[in-house]
Length: 316
Image 1 (cartoon, rainbow, N blue to C red):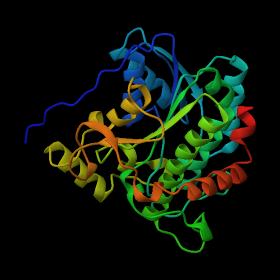
Image 2 (image 1 turned 120 degrees about the horizontal axis):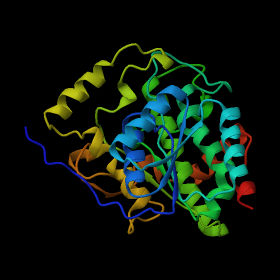
Image 3 (image 1 turned 180 degrees about the vertical axis):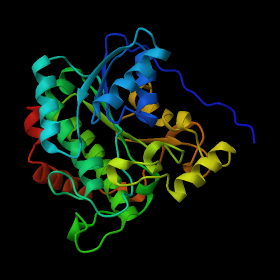
Image 4 (image 1 turned 90 degrees about the vertical axis):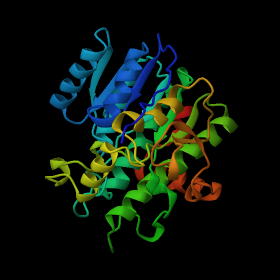
């Protein structure tokens, strides 16, 4: 089945500084390339430096004059997040766009971060919360737009409050959904608190739909040596243009949310096709698990307690 290519126009980002997590492959690499092509200086914090250098070379093949800076970051280590924050704050340069894109999905079994959190909660959510806190002075200086990448998995489920790290029972998919719901609730609460306190940053959400990204690919670093069965199915359907998106179309909601002149804070952007699995990017209703403001406030407080950092204190 033929597929009509999808795209959006990205405004000039000349003079802007943008940071994308997870930019060494997949959607993150595509986002970094598009931001660089629009004239932004792109910060690419990576866990694997050699993989990051290869990714930067890939960007430069498409955008020969790309302004790229590699930094070290392991979102599964709060010490690593703090170190990146310290480095960038020492530079003292504003950040205008932050895309919280990096993530892990369904490791073969329960794993934990360097700080003892369930891997998906710690990487997808808590690492990004800490990053926002450590970068808040620079984000305020740049009046930044912060876009947090959630997932169609956030459509159902919730926060496993009585066992956040899934120590008593473990479901990889439910733990993944929890991590994305938590990140979405945090992103929405960030917008509410920034508006109320005058922090000057704006925050919204995006999700990529379903596409053959690197989430379900072989990930030796989490013990997955081959593409999952689900990953092979997604790849086959995407190649045939059936319902799902492509890696290129999957990055468009985040790109629209982070750079669109008319994109709004406090809302969710995603594919507008059937069941929001693929199609052109557009604003969407919030998934039910993301609609509770009390739940968002509870996630905010839990996140600051577990990470040991305060976004509000950093914003003062």
